[in-house]
Length: 114
Image 1 (cartoon, rainbow, N blue to C red):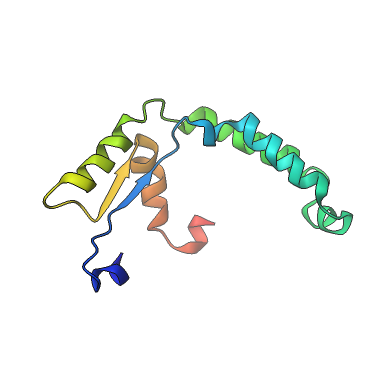
Image 2 (cartoon, rainbow, N blue to C red; image 1 turned 30 degrees about the vertical axis):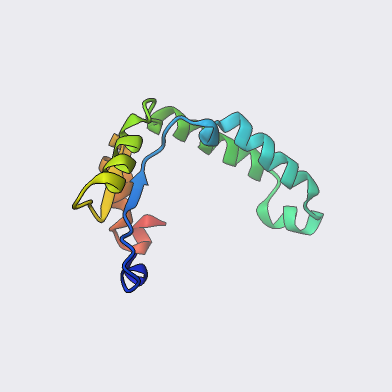
């Protein structure tokens, strides 16, 4: 964003929480991940551990149940505001989960984020 300012380009950062879209479909994500997993060499699979795919699937499923916003219109509204406003915001945080969890987490020390 700051790098582009020198060229007269104004950049707005939109930080959405987890919204229910095709990109956040746990079944689709895990199917794609399994395809990649099945192509990996055995030595790399060993580094991740035998139950990596199952553990990751369980985490994704749990997260998708507690954090997904159904209505994506707030994201679209932020995009519209960023594009059409005379004075757009530098940052937009969209979704209750982003406001209550993800955004505050991003400002904490790395040890807590991890």
